[in-house]
Length: 131
Length: 131
DNA sequence: GCGTGATTACTCGGATACAAGATGTCCGAGTTTGAGCGG
DNA sequence: CCGCTCAAACTCGGACATCTTGTATCCGAGTAATCACGC
Image (tube, rainbow over all chains, first blue to last red; front, side, top):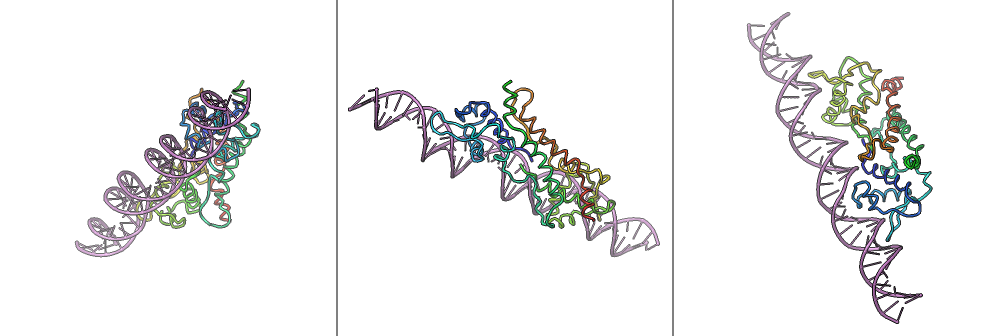
């Protein structure tokens, strides 16, 4: 039970894209170099962000990735769900009655975390950095 | 990023032990049978709970496992930490400055979840069941 | 009846096996930009 | 100067390779209760 490295890469990449120019795409090579990752692997992660609707890819020369929408709409939770999937962290596999009490508690706990991730946007961090 | 099945087994086992008699130990075979798991595997999980100080094992005939302390002290978080370890869920591997802003947000979110797990005790569920 | 030994019912720990997911790498295919070249 | 072609710079997607982790099984060792047997 840990967040994957891919999540870490995705979060940092998104932060870079928010700081960067909104019109000009940033190449995967530069993003990868800044984080010390291979470009091919990073592109796999970014593909998930594309499918999640957070960024768009611009192919061809001078291509790369840029944000797909207004940057003040992107929350941490959006990124997490794009990478890790949006399934529940805990799933009781038994079939003891309609509702497992343990499941309920775990789901509530998860919601507490998600609430916080939903209320925090990356652009907030970007502002702190730019100061 | 998911809680393991072992966590599910551990939580349900702890619930059974809380409901059971506090003096008489419960055998692994019965616990395993109730959950449809192999006894040998479940014993591995319970060993973690023993090391975590939540339960004690009684060897020999009529042996098994029982709670090690007052049952109204055992929280969900105790069990989770015993099984999953008590390391942070998210760890930024870069060394960009003393504190990673992303790390801070993730740690805060995790704390929200842990707060809830810490404030919920298994005995609360046991009371609901016995009604 | 009582002690002693054997049997039985348990847990414990290590070794092992298997499956799935995370983490990367490699390569071919498609796409756009831009340079070069001929008219 | 214009248009065409071609190379270069990109991303995209699938197919692998590897490593770690979760899940699970098997077996021998130790331990305590119980039963059997002999005194």
